[in-house]
Amino acid sequence: KASPPVTEQLQYFLSKLPEFAQRRKATAPIHKLYQASSDPVPVWVLKVNAGGWGTHVPMTIPQVCRIELYWQQMPGEELGAVDREFFNWLDEITAYRSDLFSIKPEVTFPIVWLPGSAIDQTEPIVSQLAQTFQAVAGQIPHIQGFGAPCDLFVLHQHFHTPALLFGPVGGNTHQPDEWVDLDSVQTVMETIAQFICHWCELVE
Image 1: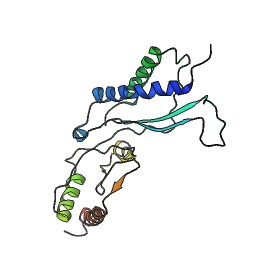
Image 2: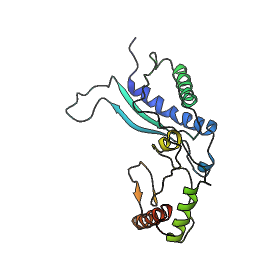
Image 3: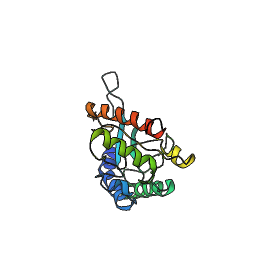
């Protein structure tokens, strides 16, 4: 019996992926800094590759399809727990359509795990930067969790050093129409300069 085309497997897999995303939202312990986020634990399709592209590629049904996924973890979540959640979901959907998946899809993790991480809002670095921003911009800063891969956890978890992310106004992170407000870049530079001076006690 001939194996089903990978295009059928791809169509089915992508149609079921929102179920994994909904499961993540339902089970992940949402950190307080992410409570206002509309998608605190996103599940994204980053790349799909099957058969190549262009007139130099033979006109044939692809034999292999690769999908690159990204999903995010909350501060405090364990790697093993989230991995089990994914593999349990994958086992369920492939078992339901065993006619499409006589061979289970191969899963690899090509990059190192970047755990979610956060510090308390009462840390001096947070309050001092917030005060400096308010003095420069004339408004209260918006403090919340940031959804993106980040190596800030190295400072938090390995060096026990309070640290945070601070940047200009923008939106649509990691999307084709990602943008940043240029006026806010100037505010960020002024804030950081003044913050360094106060933090290092160069000025009163």
